[in-house]
Image (cartoon, rainbow, N blue to C red):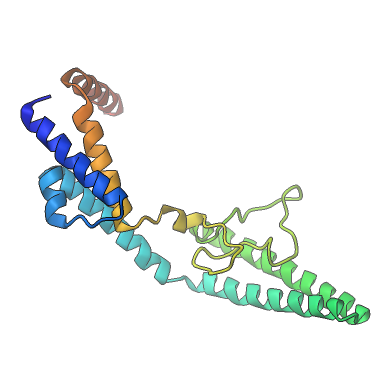
Length: 203
């Protein structure tokens, strides 16, 4: 590693420590530490994050339909639960049957929506394809949540699993650059050779 690389590594480590301590790192500092190519990669990664945020704000109509059906099913369940708590057993039984039916219809419709457009599966916090062995329970907690939901039952999967804030993207860019600088010339040559071989096989 050259003297210049040593200086860059030291600068990158200082910047990384600042970011991990929740301190600000300006774009100018990032560009100076990373260099133009790595900084361009960082900008691309952050643009991807901004695109993902924009996508999550623009829900498809099918997802809005699911949210409406889920809200109705949860309301029916809550109504039945309230009847049970107050000792109105007949109303509770009738209400729970209505809630079960609402959840069954919800899952049936969700299956139709995802079969029509498989990309919709990414809008949910958990698996949305079932069979007899893994059918979801007929209750609010067990129902898949849209990844933008504020529900405490939201598991945070799907599209939202890829969300990173700008600080995390900066940290990842610096760690990648440090890893790159930490490799020897022989390591880089071996990686280049493997890449060339792989590309040659594809041609």
